[in-house]
Image 1: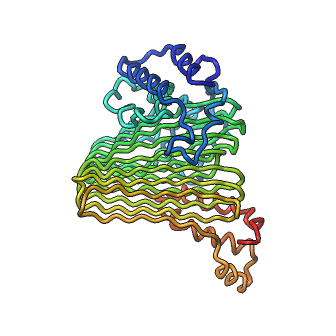
Image 2: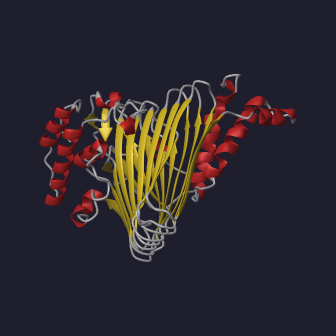
Image 3: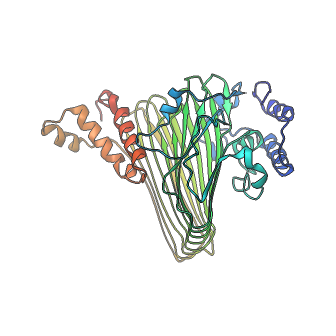
Length: 437
């Protein structure tokens, strides 16, 4: 996108008008609607209830220019690699497809995966249709400006044995922005695992604004993992929008270990009977990192189940936000919904704002929610130290135990092992936590 810095709403509009794309008319029309909507909404501020605890002013005021894209470096690819995990891989640099770094030769029968741009003519009924932008300014921006992205389409009854990786590398040059986009469509009775990983090639203050759309048709099963470990100077705003048909299953796990600021909106609609979903997340942050998860599970039809567990480990002056909303529509009888948010504060300066919500219009349901905020248990610390374990190691063991049940939900073993290691590495400074704990 050859345009000037994107520093204000008018400049975004000017940037949009400056771009000439060769694409289907329907997509151009969607982009026009999106940029018009953004011009009315503008960037969210802390005056918006949904952004009360997350200040995007640094993004809104930023002088952003599109990343140029280039071949992925070996060092950047190594950051997004999981030892022992092979199979298909799609690589994007600054949101642009890097065919040379991708590995699609091992794609099994029954699945198509590749660049959105290459097959956009065939995506009219799905691309941009699920992640609406009526009240979502950041989704509107992504819809208006994305150049490329990943598409995965799984055929009816196909069972894809190996996970498919999608790697988004930000070049990391200060002042750059990228617009990652993903569409996953699982046809009836199919099964697939997808890992989205976001990393930075350099440590400049850059911004990634991503949108992922996932559709599971009747009796399909989709396991989705989103890993955010960009540089500690980076900003990430993202949206995952999912829709399920009859007896389907979607799970998504958010793993947030990097970035200066992360805002994730994760929404799912159970749009037919007997669907099931699991929304989970783990955020491990320190310094002045800020991570905000906003989730919405919409039980639109009867006899659907949802399970949700988000856990946070916060140290230093970091701040976490969790807002989880469960909606049960009037016709959604026999709903079973469970939501939990648990947080461990390792410093008296760390902060968490948690707000679980239930909106129930049906009467034959079972819905529970809860939130906890705590510190390391002094009795447990004493017990371990009394058995010869050093204080720092004892703290690490307790933090690991706190996060372990979330890590157990990661069904891809190389990914699970990677984040077990990441967690332990991130705890290297725990012994410096304040004595009050």
